[in-house]
Image (cartoon, rainbow, N blue to C red; front, top):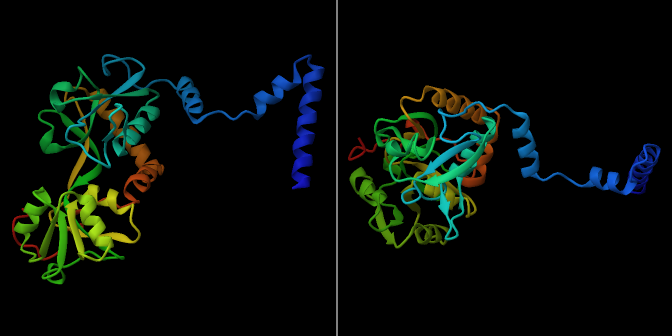
Length: 295
């Protein structure tokens, strides 16, 4: 510790001497060197050095990637809207990274129609399945839509025969409840007003499984110790980023930026933060032996 302090003091003395030789104020120079730059300042400096990869008319406003969020229908962990208007979530983090990779700042707007908003209100819309895009194009894939089962402890992808007769908690009136009823799994259901109640019951040992939306479940599971996904009821379908079908420039750049984020580890950090690092679900994630209502 004393050696380290001596080194630091020696550096400060050297800086001070150098400043005196150049007729500058040593205190100002030392303060400048020892004051850390904020993350936002560093990102702003990086953007200032970069050449924006997109400009009007490919984007609605020069210098910005304008991102559409469907806050009325998108829930945690993708988008969490506060009463103050602030938003957070996977979509916000990923969109911010996309903008940074493109040399742009980011701004968010609330939209109701994917197709109608592109090119007028926003440049891209996050978290869109191909079937929900209208005539817009969906590029990339960073999430999946499916109903899944969660349980305490580590669990391999289950077989339907292992689940029959076991207890499961779910949200009353949810899509997950309907799909479970159609699955033929033969589980004993307990309904709760919300998913938090179902996961509390799982942690307390009152039910053996929870059935819910895949990403909502992974998000809530990250707040509990030792909860894992058992498998999905239906085959997961990919969700990506919607862009205008005739805007080739933004399609290419968004796909390239997303590929970079997913390959350099940034995408993994986002998943760790919001869904505990749950891997992307594929067709092999589906519980084997389900025979009804999942086509």
